[in-house]
Image 1 (cartoon, one colour):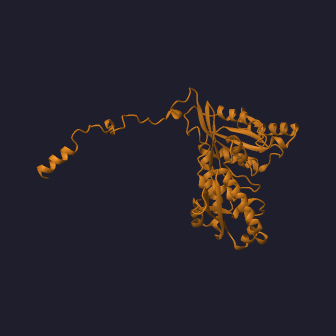
Image 2: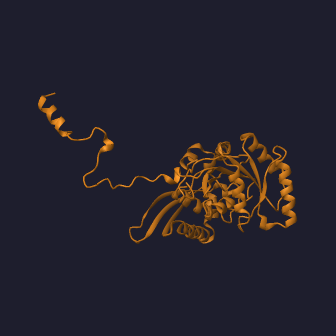
Image 3: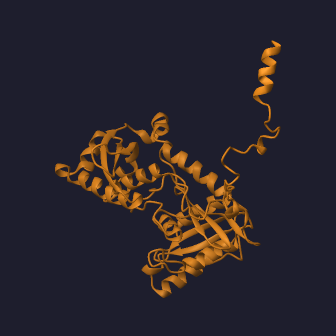
Amino acid sequence: MSSDFDAQFDAAFEGLPEDPDDVVLEGAENTAAPLDYSQYTDTPEGFRSGFVSFVGRPNTGKSTLTNALVGQKIAITADQPETTRHTIRGLVHRDDAQVIVVDTPGLHRPRTLLGERLNEVVKDTYADVDVIGLTIPADEKIGPGDRWILENVRSIAPKTPIIGIVTKLDKASKNQVGAQLLALHELLSQDDPNAVVIPVSSKEGMQLDELVQVIVDHLPEGPKFYPDDHITDEGQEKRIEELIREAALSGLKAELPHSVAVQVDEMLPSRTREGVLDIHAILYLERPGQKRIIEGKDGLRFRRIVGNARKEIIKLLGQNVYLDLRIKVLKNWQSDPKSLGRLGF
């Protein structure tokens, strides 16, 4: 290397500080505000934080309860069992605590590869949460299915505290609710004499604050995991897919609901309509015959699906949208590893 090059190299760095942190941009005058991490670090003494997941038979109100606690719809609901297909985290913020509600697929006896994969997700989640809530409707007697779920949860997470939650308080008489509380406490107290049981109504907002307090009492002291203005870690695209699937599930019977999957292909501002977001999505089915059911007579049912989904998406995004939804057949996708991977399972 020439001496001239050495001189030029040294001159290029002449006057610069040795520590890069000492560099000040010309004109900046050191006025840049430091990043504010206070909402994570300035937590009061005794602040509690942690994760809770609700378990129970299909249609015991798990996702509805999640939405009620969070204060906004983050999980879709439907009359069909096994509606939830992926883990959704909703946030409950208090001055003294942060509760992360983890809504998962229901634990069930799988009949497909999809079912097996969902069960693995569920087991991993139950093993990691701080509290588990067993949901039992006030107007339905405790049965073998409830006991099967409880046994499996205890085998997966033997040291995790389980809270008994009697749901749908608004659908039962006082005597029914009282009897259910006693029955659920008896079931849980076989392994935990100090088990807590609480009745709630997600629809009427009854006892929700009391339930949150019971959950917080079981959480460890810890920091905030999410900013105060967050309600979920669910991505916008995934929430849109779920709203479309919810609209498609409405009124379906038998096995067809399990064959429905939705994937957003593209979202972009409209080139021809100012302020409109164009959403292009695909509704997947497993067999050609299912397409006729989804479309309905003269395509009326399909148009209703698109219209209802569009209304919910507009509520979510707060702007006008155009929904281009197409139907495709992906043969037996629930049991095909390649198709499951393509759909994100």
